[in-house]
Length: 246
Ligand code: FPP
Image 1: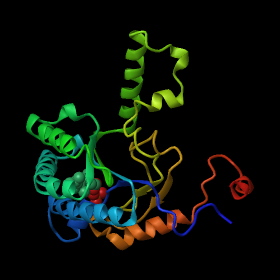
Image 2: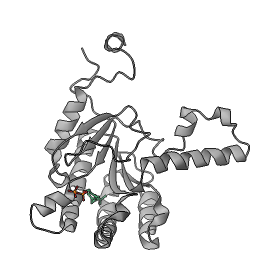
Image 3: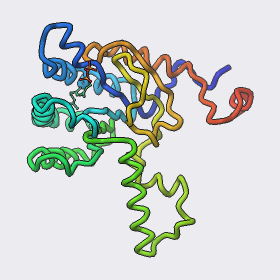
């Protein structure tokens, strides 16, 4: 008997939304067309998570490495984010969604940063579904920024270096206030983490699918959740220990 039950819903899901470019290329359209289709898949994923009772959904929208893409693609993605924020925030707010942006936001231009801040503060009181958008985010960056904050606390005399342990450092890692990451999904056929949520994914179940992000619909998310429910999460213990646990 495994610990996972068919009804087990992950509390926190993260998704690397890969495959927009290939989806567009298959249709002889520019990559921005794929990103725009990807935005509709984001909406579907948010709706699914609300229906399934997932508590938090974290999406990799723009990595710290994505600045290296052609300038017109970066520009198209930025204006897509602005349009999405302008268009979707009211409805998300009305549906009880709390929006957060994680990553080094200082790299974005002022109008976009302001929109992100406004969306975060407007929805800060919501608790039905926490949607976290990772922009200019890297998992190593996250660990470095947490270490820097720990070092500053030491300098202020609030903490001794020997008091820094995993639990303490975790307080400064992005999303520490949310349930731990349960399910890490990557679409688009690659089987790697690509510097997303390195710390948070320590005990997450990994799920890779060939489906390209714009095609990842509600049935795809259900399949990923069903797969998750069949996993045995042992956290270093034996299967027998897990079975004997209350
Ligand atoms: C990866 O596919 C996708 C991205 C770098 C951008 C993700 C952005 C969206 C899904 C747009 C909407 C997001 C929000 C939050 C409104 P890729 O371009 O690497 O695809 P490829 O591997 O097929 O080239």
